[in-house]
Length: 307
Ligand code: GZL
Image 1 (cartoon, rainbow, N blue to C red):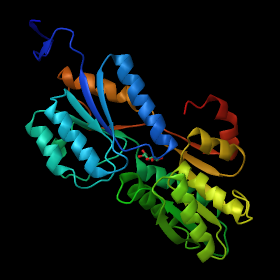
Image 2 (cartoon, protein in one colour):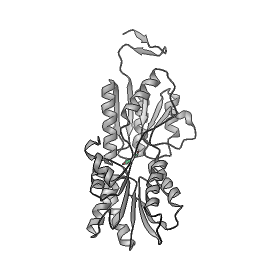
Image 3 (tube, rainbow, N blue to C red):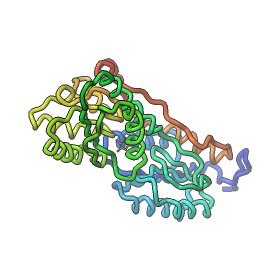
Image 4 (cartoon, protein in one colour):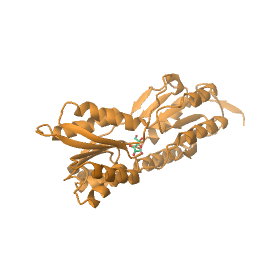
């Protein structure tokens, strides 16, 4: 068909749908599944040709996928980088090939900001601060030490680094709040349970668990109950994501406070892709709006949660 030029003069074959290559981290958590669903449904709704790849949480698989999208000459590349570092080479290849890149969910530590058009995702440091603030408020009159164990997300990932630093920054104001153990549970239930078992063995009295996501918290709850302790009572639990299963546990009082991390990034991603092919300039950072829930608040909204 004769090439038609759109308003910005970009050549495009009449009726050829926008081709979007998306490299997803994996399927490690409820949050991830909801995020994948949002992207796939939004692409379908927009009538885009989505080329979707699941990297099983391996960076080399994401780099392979990005290279394949470059070979296929897709219109836009988007991905959620499993870890922050090691992306400059492949992002330069995309830039040299003239293919714009959008980051969703997680960030990269590349100094060269021209390697991607925008980053759509949560402020993980702020999520860590919200968790720390709730804990500080709970223990503001503590007269003795409060022993905290921390289940970190995937080592090297932006959410793990930032949720850890935001939390530490806020609890530093109360010397009684002590992180006595901190280890990665890789954002999964299985690992969260395994590491919590180890924490319970090596720490006599644990007062609080701070889990970087609901799936690790849910795994830890299994370990806490197996040890004959009551989650949310003997050990206070703070978590992040606010996926259905996490909110269910919160409504039962097993998790005391959840910081929401919104996975429904699909609509914003499709809007960004369309703007890019229409030659519009985008904000370099699009922050997702999200909230927090106590057990009471979780109970109130549980039925209306979308994911
Ligand atoms: C956060 C996202 C994290 C979720 C986890 O935006 O990258 O990865 O918090 C998921 O549940 O595995």
